[in-house]
Image (cartoon, rainbow, N blue to C red; front, top):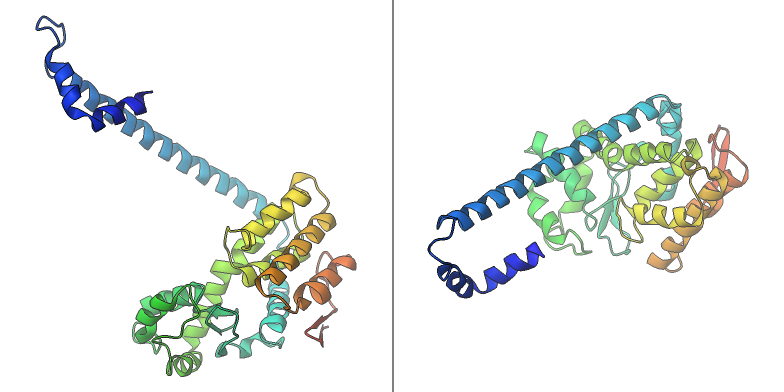
Length: 310
């Protein structure tokens, strides 16, 4: 009611002023009291809002610290060096048709999927913001790099499949910069910051083992760290409605099966006719075999080709 009243006074200031001036002269309140009271009320409200924000920040900080403590007590899982290397090989077999992911720093092409140019070790795209962010962050420390001149164009095409301002030189500039060790390191850092570390962290908090952590990571790479229905977080929410996570007391295999089902549907909805090998003949195969630790030797198929890691 107070909010409605404030809006009413704001909408009809002359009526409010008229009401004020017919107040009897022997009123116990001085003429300036209403304004002073309003000012005091606003200040109190602001103080309360600030206190609420501080409390929420502290609560979030406390929750994060509790999560960090929980994760610190868990096995490294996919974050173990050998498992992380395996994860990159698996992703690279899907993204670049090779397990030698270090050959992909300079790859760049338009796959015709609506995301513009796809480039680098994790498939950074000119249309999905992550390539722009990579180049911006890299340029902060290396302002004279060969991609910096394309930043205005990258900002313009972000969110589209357009090449405007990028052709004809951007692809050559990308390949040239990919020979620079600092840019290779920047690609790895951005991959870890945006995709690998958040995926593994959340999977561990959901009670998932090494395979589940990889399932999250690969989904984060393909679908993006987005909250909409087809983004990674949207897929996770949908899966959680189908089956509880181990952290919620659910079955790990049942939850991952539901997640992979939903993910496959999302892949096919986004790109009808897409080859879903990364789900069907890789992750689903590992899950069916009960390889929850993603133990090697590992054999999988991707787009009809067979890959092995001893």
